[in-house]
Length: 287
Image 1 (cartoon, rainbow, N blue to C red):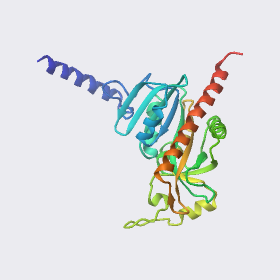
Image 2 (image 1 turned 180 degrees about the horizontal axis):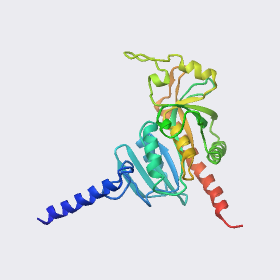
Image 3 (image 1 turned 45 degrees about the horizontal axis):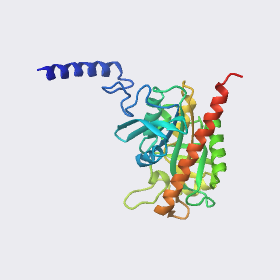
Image 4 (image 1 turned 135 degrees about the horizontal axis):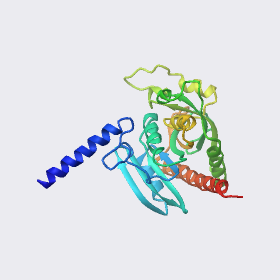
C-alpha cells in the first residue's frame, strides 16, 4: 500500500512539473528533459560533438569526471581538464539536436561557451583527408535556425573562440584551413550526393560551392553560431572539424587516419579551452 501511495505522490509531482514547464520540459529529477542536465551539471566551457563515442574519448582525457548524464542520444560528462571546469556533450546528428542542446544547457549554466569538435567533408581540392577546418562563417543550408533568426542573419563564429582555435592549432602544428562551412540538414541529397534510388534536387551543389570558396560540409555548426548570436544570454560559439571525406575526389579517410584526425581535432579543442580560460581569467581579475 505504501508503494502505491508513493507512486501516486510521484505522479502528482510529475504532472505538476509538466504543467508548469510545458514550454521548457523537465524530468522527474528537475533536469531539462532532453539533455538530462540541470543546475550545477555543466561547466561554463562545453565541448560538443555529434558522436557519443567521441564524447567518451574526450572525457577520458579529463583529469576527473564528476557528473555523467545520459538520455536518448544526448550524453554529457562534466569534470576538470588541467584544473579547468569542463563539459563535453554529444548531441547526435543535426542542427535540430544541436539547438535542443544549446537551449537546454544555456538554462543550466551562465555565460556558456560552445566549441564544436566535429567531422566534415572537404569541398576544396587543397584540403586533404585528415586536415582540420576551423569555421569562420556557416552557410545555413538547413531550416532549424530559421525558427530563431531570419535568413539574412549570418552564422558567424564568436571572434574570441575563433581566435583561440586558430592559436591552438598553430601551437600544435596541425594542418588546418579557415573559412566558410556549409551546414546542411541532410547528409545525402542535401550535400549533393548522387545516391541510388532517390532523386537529388541539386546534383551540382559541390561544384557550385567550390566556386564560391566554401571549404566543407557538416551538419551542426550554423545552429551554434546563430543561437549564440541571437540569444539574450551572453553565449559564445566556435568550432573545428576533422576532414573525413574528400567530396571532390570521392575518397574517404581510412580507419587508422580517421582516429588520428579525430584526436587532432579533440586536442585542438582542449588547447583552445585552456587559452580561452586564461583570457577570461585575466578579464575577471581586478587590475
